Amino acid sequence: MSQPPSIILIAGPTASGKSALALKMARATGAVIINADSQQLYADLRILTARPSAEDEALADHRLYGVADAAEAWSVGKWSRSVIDLLDAPQMRERQFILVGGTGLYFMALTKGLADIPSVPKIIRDSAEAEYLSQGESAFRARLAEIDLLAAQNIERGDRQRLIRAASVFAATGKSLSKWKSQTRPVLGDRQWKGHVVEIDRRRLYEQCDIRVEQMLLGGAIEEVWALIERNIDPTLPIMKAVGVREIASYLNGSASLEAATDALKQSTRNYAKRQLTWFRNQTQGWNIAFQSV
Image 1 (cartoon, rainbow, N blue to C red):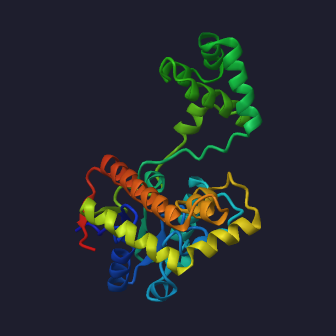
Image 2: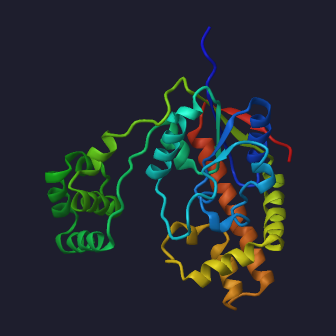
Image 3: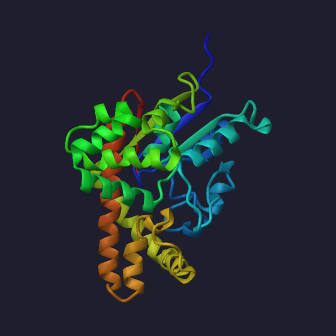
């Protein structure tokens, strides 16, 4: 008889009840809950990112929640390496794990593999774009073929962005984009895990999004964003792109009323949930559907 999977993946949109499901399962099995949500990595936005409460965290072993400072930029690769370290830690032997979150690329890295390509400095990308504009697509593609033949052959005609990206990656790293992609492998083996996607009626999901926004604003989300503004955090860092930061900042800087900012945040949250729903439905074929009635 084969061993059951030791790792459970729970994916789904924001406000769908996936964290509550993970906690219920962890309390029943003694599993370790590992965060798979890029926004909940940051200690600075506990309320705005709907991280599990301190009370919930005390009920089960939670890892990779609030471990990053606002000034840090965590990549998929850095998160993946942290997960591997947890799974391989001697003290974690014989433990079960539940990875739960809403970041599709994290689950992609776990189950299919994702290239951990270093970020390309803006000056290099700008230089590649200038070359494209001066040379034209045909000449630029021919030059690209000398360093990355696969990319030059596979990138569709007229796809300027991907051509520039391929050239920029080589210029920044000395290794072709195709080479980076060929060296990827899934974090988890096929028999290690079982996946669940949380589904909820869309109308109910949107209602839950609106309720959550109201609770966040009353519970300290405004103060969290104000603290970020006071720190003068680089606006290009991931934390500044978290859902809600821009909307609340517009209220704090006086460009929007609290009512307008609230409405904008509700809409952004619903839009985010919709994108997540679409992504998981397209990318998690074969996963179990966990219907929620929150």
